Length: 517
Image (cartoon, rainbow, N blue to C red; front, top):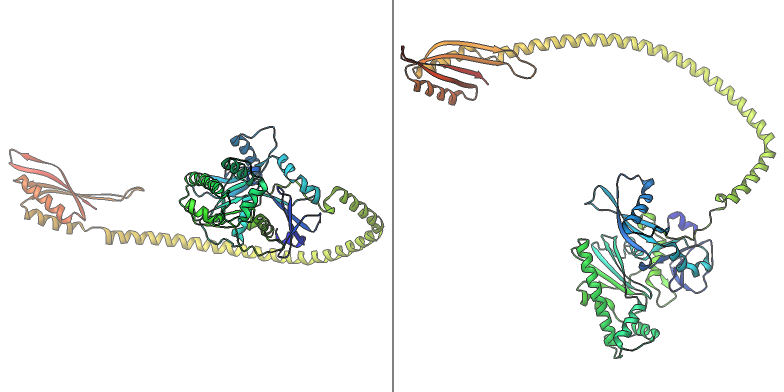
């Protein structure tokens, strides 16, 4: 229950609808009762066995808005699970988070035929009229984590034997992951035991043996066959766990919690640990309740814990069809009565209220009129101030724009001066250096040209020298170019398209291009 609900109800009643037993609690005391009665101060909670409903996983696109989410899940459940279109199933869901599926929201859906609910709870509703909460039994196990009865994280498996159902449920990191009903309820175990034993054994005798005989010490004839039955059960459970680990990519199950609805002398969890090779324990948690009965079904304790949890600490998955009637003020009849009473009061109060309202309106009018005059005077004064400030702002804006233009002009002039003074390479110095190298390699300079192009929007300015080289040996020219490239390659780019030979003059000619990098 939420905090509001906790204050609304003075006690909690839990129901096992399959055995028709009831446990009530006031404060921290659990009391078995055989004669439950309806009380509007009593919060009622019950559960559905795993085999009563269909459980599956559905993914819905994150683009679906919240107001259309239920309809999307409802329609997809019918399509993907092949539900009978003639039956109006009751569908509840809880959201789970899958980091690997970023495009969808993922949900565990629980589906049941409303007729099943009616059949299961017919006897209980005859006695107590309303049931506030009916939840799938595997979700009750969330209480163990919310109350820190299980503090460890990791993957935990829960196995619980009941008279008409036995289920396997898996939680991962304290959140529901998987559940399955297996065909080993006490009724089904009795039938299988009789097959193994070879003759019919009374159900009461079978249950008495499971409850009060210890398989380690007993010499009863049933012992051997009960052990065979348990081995068969654990083999089936092992197959299921193997499948689940592979299907859900589970590396390891940290612990198995296994127990029965009955009091049991035999420590089943020890057998489970041996047969399954996984650390096992019973359901004997410290639930924090005092009981007037030697043994109360663990599910009753879980339901009473669940009813006290806040909405953020439990799964909101309610299959009840036995809702309490709305409050008096929310019923049609209640509204009609209240309207009639209000009409009578208005009939008597109209003259007085009319005079009172008239006086209040006139007084309010005078006050508003006085306030209007004051506000109007303030408005006129502020409008004049605003006009004066706007004129002043316009003058200042013009001065600022003039200063900006003058600043931009001076800035551009300085940039040009800096470019000429600092970045412009001195042609005379360059010619001096290069001619010195020409002489070193016995290469003569016939012509020298310099060209410079202005900057465009997309390219830098191009500065280029063209030297007409003359030599008696083409190797001197090539050696010169190699030297220049090696020495000044970081500052200049050297290139020559061809070296020609003049037969008459017996000289080699070439045009060397020098580009500033």
